[in-house]
Image (cartoon, rainbow, N blue to C red; front, side, top):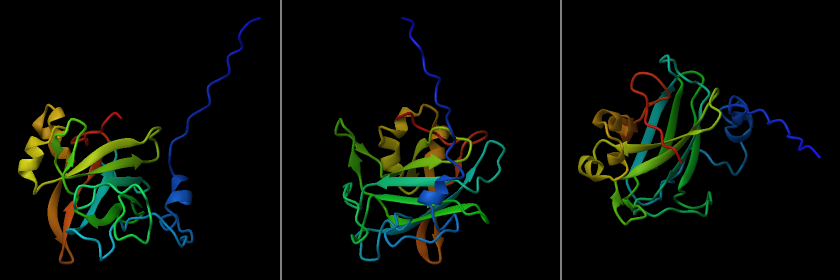
Amino acid sequence: MPIELLPETPSQTAGPYVHIGLALEAAGNPVRDQEIWNQMARSDAPGEHIVVFGNVYDGNGHLVRDSFLEFWQADHAGEYHDDYNLEKPFNSFGRTATTFDAGEWTLHTVKPGVVKNSAGVAMAPHINISLFARGINIHLHTRLYFADEGAANAACPVLNLIEQPQRRETLVATRCEVNGQLAYRFDIRIQGDGETVFFDF
């Protein structure tokens, strides 16, 4: 009896429908009472409170105004929290989206502490990012490091996997201030000049 092969299910990109279920405010829909969004740290969370923000650019240098980002990071002491609860001062997981006007995303969190890799080697403080956008079939993984952690960045085993020093710089957020608060700018370039380093997980 001949084997009948089923046709492959067609793939679809993430946008723009991801906003309807996961970024309600950005899609113009009513926000739920318990919403995972861009406030990862409440005011009473221990650690250095920071704002992280940036834009997402496509290969032509144009703003991607409907991208969706997820974040996973350790707390100020280098510990991950895997029990998400909006009543807690800090959660390791957050989400945000670029706006349709300025095309900017924003995250409110605390600066993460040092985490060791599986070999016990300390990695520089970082935030893990997953990027979803129209035209991307499988979301992209990258990391955000901090410009004021020069010594830790130079010794980080993950950053040192990137052979070209100038490519490492695409993962380093620049320090600034926003309304008197410590902030870091991190722009993501999906393709083209200055393309952000993405990781294959």
